[in-house]
Image 1 (cartoon, rainbow, N blue to C red):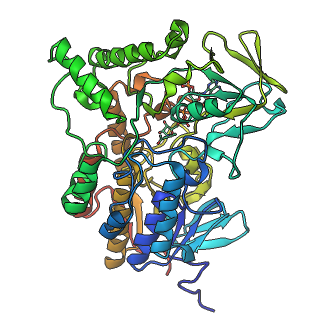
Image 2 (cartoon, protein in one colour; image 1 turned 45 degrees about the vertical axis):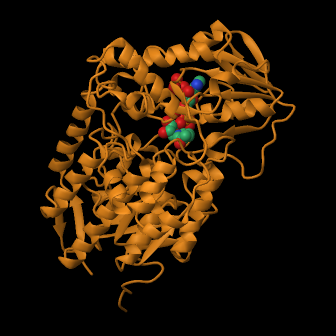
Image 3 (cartoon, rainbow, N blue to C red; image 1 turned 90 degrees about the vertical axis):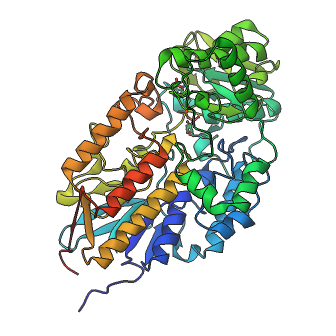
Length: 542
Ligand code: N01
């Protein structure tokens, strides 16, 4: 009996995850003639935008940028209703993409990939799912997301709470009504900052438990910016090229001057203008040294701190909401609608848990600093085991049965954030060591997917079929990623970029800060030069 070369349980590639990354990977690999199976744990496509249904969830990069650019017609035909679209609209967009490109026929929903083991005898991946299916694939493409492995902190008594509990990243599908309730929210990152104003409007009482205040700018959401819409409609190719070769995957005039070379008046005027713009990085990108130089950073941070003091009526609450002790931008900054003003409401209480630590969760609420806060519902806006969590959540084993979790025990080591030695034909989309979290993820996803598709095409054309990062190349790249990080202020801060939000997680700067355009050119050069740093070979057995 001969082994079939393809079929539903023997595709050329298995793609994991049906978010922005997985959907495009499925589309492009299929276009390149590969047979593909995509597995998605959710009951529908959408990834992050399927799971994050909490009130206020929306993107904070302008939707015209935070959407695919691989297809001009798709770009033209989808009109975003807002500058920063809300979760239902982004989910509808991804559902539209799945239908428009006929992706669903190769997607298996409601099915979680549990393990992926590399079989050296056949040079193929054996992938098993929680539905009991086993598939053998030549390639494994991991589009599992950066922020999809939820973090529920180990607070004493966490499971004793008698009322409903929610995590922003696993929000129920049925509407949640907080009317008449006393609601507690733990966490004031991007998710908490979006959710808190809307819960405050609905709930009887809202108590926010804040450990670290964040820097947040007003979103000034509204109509999509007509300048950008026009550019993409009239000058698609050039606009796309500019986006793809930018520093962060957004159209932005790169700063050329230091914050320290201008007068106080000029700096203040620039910050004020940027404050009015309503963009995530407006102030940070006003000068070129905000994330490299403490003094420069201090100016920008002080400007935002002064705005918080203006917006919050109670001076003690304003002080508690004021971020200090870390450089602005080194924890992921936020964009909000009415966040600070929410604390002027009579039904909102802020608990500074640095001053009044959470002692325990009880059946009826939270005890912090000796005070009992009685609650009917509790929301964890406590973030994610970022970047490595979703990958290590799958039992991945490479050559010699080595577990990825063991290989990365001291932190992730990758070549270009795409590949890791000992795990042939396995590709991470926006893996650790790529711009990913420090960029517009959609632009970075497109670059990775296209680069991987080109590599797989090259393997076919050169009759090699097996590709693996070389150990030396990945060590060199990973050292470069850390060295680039050390040129900035990021490593000084406890953030999820550093793995510092998860107890016991190795402290490693997870994303690459070299910039989207620079990184793109580097990857293109590697492809052009015949993939140095990768070993290409023929398969063990067809
Ligand atoms: O998570 P976070 P997130 N006791 O890790 C606190 C993206 N995103 O879901 O800072 C008390 O940022 C924790 O405190 P601290 C975006 O990239 C994008 O909000 O660790 N508090 C922090 O305040 C973002 O960065 C969008 O001291 C505890 C909060 O919980 C990323 O996802 C929207 C605690 C977690 O903040 C993650 O954002 C949403 C404890 N034991 C998310 N443990 C947009 O596009 C944790 N905290 C707009």
